[in-house]
Length: 433
Image (tube, rainbow, N blue to C red):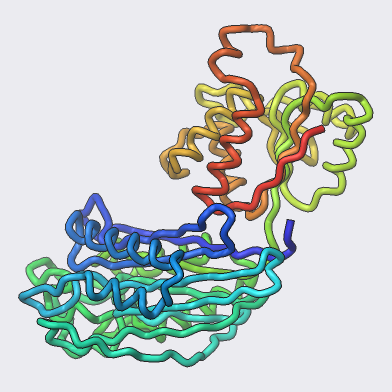
């Protein structure tokens, strides 16, 4: 496992009254590839139509980013493909594409950035903003009535650096509905007049305490940068997940808790990895039991123990007791407590539910309060996951119907590993004892 990781996460809130977002964020890494592509696209308008347009853009960007085509040329292909709205004379979708190329040992992390009509991306080293040069490429598309410019840049990210980009739902948060003019200085002001948010809707009354940070054009990129800097000064080790949540929540507050537009924020952070060790299955021999104790005692990160027999072995080797846990368990067997271990769950049934939810990318907020949710919550806050899987047959499993239902442990672990790698871009290692 590397001592440096690339932490990428995002937060999204839909426009008030919409059941689907007009912003689409797509994060992808091809198996075996040292390239990660993060794309944020904002479709014109909101709802289903905007979502379709943004999805088309983000998936095109994703496919082209993994091709041999230069990123600037890829942006031109996307723009040539996207139609121009006949009434407004503007593109049906905006986009920000970050193509992250890195060495296997993370000795270098290079970023190619393409921006079209989204608010300007921000960079930080620690809590200090970073300025960098962007190259502009003016497009001359038929039917376009405004100047269309695609900005491109490339830079290296080092330990402690952050890249943050967002949709205009963040930069324009707090704007009174229908009051936006045509001459916005913001890079995310492509929508122009009252049609940005819908002129016929009632105006939002922003609390007076917010007026200092919200101008005629909303929160604004400068104030967003200032806010992020304050968060980073207060909490230098904040995760990308928590940082984007703070930014999106602040925008939501400025919109008086009724989002005027889709709010999406993405953060990329190069930092020390957060690790989790998952121990499941009894080791093959007593000698392996002692080896397991050494692994747990010397592990720098969270430790999850799965399985009743496994928990007894771990407790015995650590000189601890297995205690009952009174936290909610839902329909799953209840969890237990071993001092010094972050989570102790039942084995196969819980692993089966965890794997199923990871494969389906179920949101934490949609999960019942049970051990599987607590399990996944730890994993979502983790960069590197290490499995230690015992190879001794579990003597306590004597129900053939149960065994047939949940399958054997090894294929289940394989499925869980694939879900973590493909759906959440986690680094995963498995060892058997």
